[in-house]
Image (cartoon, rainbow over all chains, first blue to last red; front, side, top):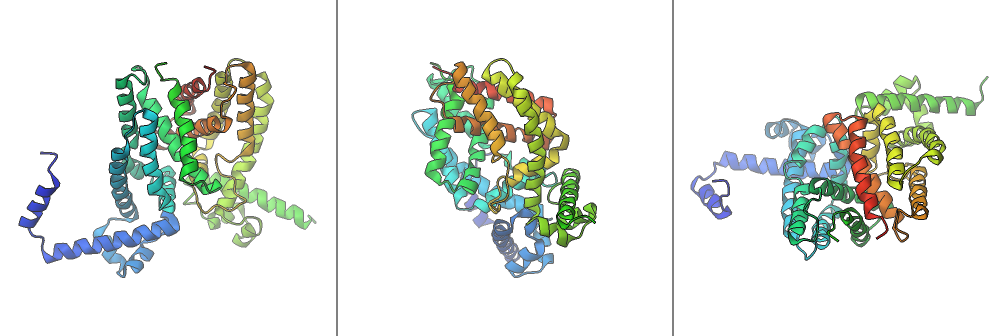
Length: 215
Length: 200
């Protein structure tokens, strides 16, 4: 049974009441994650040390290592939590009469999400290019790729006859995702806000989807 | 005795060479300013008389490298033949062949382009005016040639091309993909983008 409804999960949790020790452990984890998120946001992945994270959480480095194997484990946990929340919100937003509208609505959610937390996005992107940490971060990010959501939008458009059924959906999805990510640089260097980002992305979607249009 | 200015230039050159090699050998994060200074045979203090930060060093390394490369490309472009897409393909093929020789260095350059802490002096990936100008010229020539639409938004097209070019390096980072592999993918992407910009 893969899709257990949330309510029944909490019912099970109530029956098997966690021990005091398990609860304390959970609270410690949450405290460490909150302090780590702040520090990664402030100093980037490399700049934040386990010592700083422990100090900010008011505990020893030993206590941090009791909950997480190392810094990359901690970082991966944080971006995985963000990614799941964002993925759900983007999926829910991907609605519209045309592929262009659905994609813009979906990416708007992504922009808004990251605009609140740009340094963490930067730390994640920088880490994904790093030879050391890269494979783990990429692996984590690849578990629920947004390119799959984009592909669903494009396939639905092909089903409606808006896009050609022979369009290379995988390639188009990847290119749209690349543009979406690359556009964040305009935030860093040109102080673009959500409106300017959406305008540029709309043009990019038009260009990239043009060759796949049925007419 | 060498003048002070000549000495400063020599230090600058040594630091840039040491940094270029270290970034590529051990990666950007692992290459500390101290390690760069050691390799260059200069003091950490003298590195900071010429550069403001490690990001600044990376930016200068890339500017020097790319200036030489872009000079070569500019010599070649008048001799390119074929459609606009084919000409743009030739240009990016040269870039892939060049950057994959020091791929970790280029990955650091892309990563730095997402930094929200860059100083005004740094020129991250995507901001090099010479590359953008070369692409813009190629696309405008396409308008004259008639295979790019007259009202095409040149900036949007350049952003699409450069996004695809940079993010294709994920294949190099994840699987050690070669210049040929990335060029083949880029050829398809350029085809799609320019089809999107073709006259209707």
